[in-house]
Length: 267
View 1 (tube, rainbow, N blue to C red):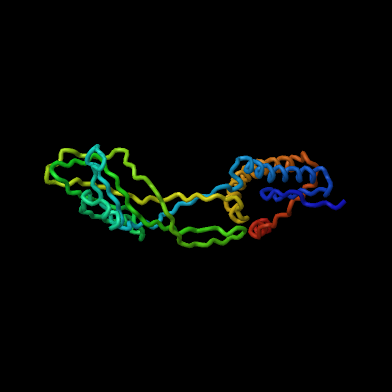
View 2 (tube, rainbow, N blue to C red):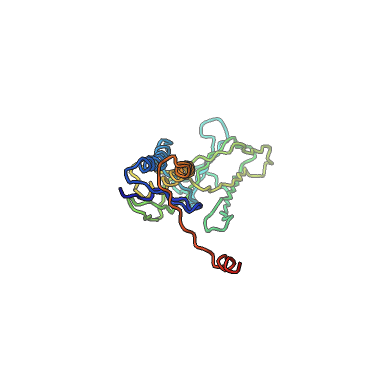
């Protein structure tokens, strides 16, 4: 029966040969299966092998549209409020409750990446000496635009395109500073800094493409496979080097160094 090379030890320059249907060949086939299959099962059972939801970070292009609506409550009775907006139709409905504030805004690009990072907002509402603000409602309108990369199913390509969305958010400050006791001739002032954070974009992957799965799956598989390769590599070396599996060791003939041959000739 013709023998085939089953294993070679590069450090010892030894190759181990045996029959194709020998016990050593079957054992090597079993070891190979135990090396590559279990890491796949472990990665799959870790519930992170198949991509079900993807996420990425993106800094949206946010700009203040200079559109606002402001309502200040000055008492507990109905109709005790002052209002103003950038919408003429809304202002006409307020009649004597309309009070025009002084508004100043400034957007800032802190990291100089071409996208605004925060808005500095200041509103000064003039008041009569007998008026006191006990609550405020403020609506600011922004434009949101994402430059989104969408993976084409079953393709290694991506398309990048901008799109705008309508976002509703609630501005919440856990520790606002409300200063009372103003002078009679000073306005009610709102000072706020609104940050434009990096957004986490989540999208479902119900039918992910082949390349999208491979991009995440191979990292999990290879990280586990490296451990199995190291363990079963040591097992194969022990089995063949100690002839636990009957094979025919074939040692390679090392080339003789010319320097060594010259020294032996001189002696």
